[in-house]
Length: 265
Image (tube, rainbow, N blue to C red):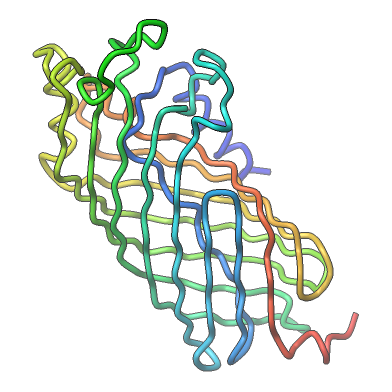
């Protein structure tokens, strides 16, 4: 319950802000592998993930993300204050990790992954762009690119029917290539400091997540709720208005493993 409260509090801190997003954290790849040569893949509407155990305790993983929201959010103004309907872009990351199953029936799993990623996003500056009077959208676009590194410890309970995993990710994100259209807030001296200072130094993100999988053996439905907060945002600059604070990801999980054949209740 404390973990759920932590996610709820993090969400509430940003739910009152109107976000113009130039960074959407990826869905966290939380495979919870248990044995050598086990494979787990997850596919959702805007992400794909895979992990493979190359030995009894070492695994590799990769994740891809693609964000394009206009077709899913209805008309302008329907979105809430957390999600930016205009953000487009994506990212890719890969990692190497250690995992260990333990307990009397090896139902508990601890793993820790570290890795690197890169990506970029663009969006419209909704503070100035008037959708009812469309003009050259390029003049109102904000763009960012980034490279990042992360470390991600997780603890989970894994069963043929249900899995529950809590992950705590710490990311260092280096933003570069920040640009703003001629009529976006980058052209307004009041806002330009906040936007361009995002890339003035690496930014540290705390990203906790809870992942649930329900199904039977090889195929499960997956749901993940995650939060993200920049830990070294400059006071008074509204940095977090540019970062999506929460993610809800749904999809399907495929797991190929021998331990299902020998599982005992």
